[in-house]
Length: 164
Image (tube, rainbow, N blue to C red):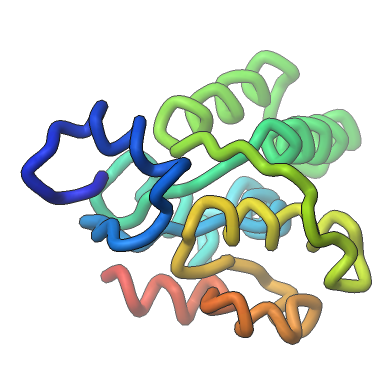
């Protein structure tokens, strides 16, 4: 959440129009879908540790409607293929929880395409629009060039080292 003399509702009202000079308490990040899947598949590793910190003060996840839809579709596909130990209801609970703790960001698709993969473009757009500090992904190379937007592209293990 932003710090300052104004209450959070005031900042939320100003944020879309100002977009600059706002200081956030925690690192703002977009989690690539592969981090979500990896963390749900195994309780070992950095991805699970990152998911375990959802809703804490460790970082602020930022999502958009299209990213949440991708999360849900991908987790559902893995669950239905028995690659995750989740039921259909469990998938809804996971996605609903992410939505409840994340900051929701509108995106406007103004400058696409930038990256070779349209799904990666969507993640980059959320990060840019949400003034995020980083994108957390297992596919760091897929986001080559995204640094010019002032966004770090971090592997889960590297990110975990920054927030622990």
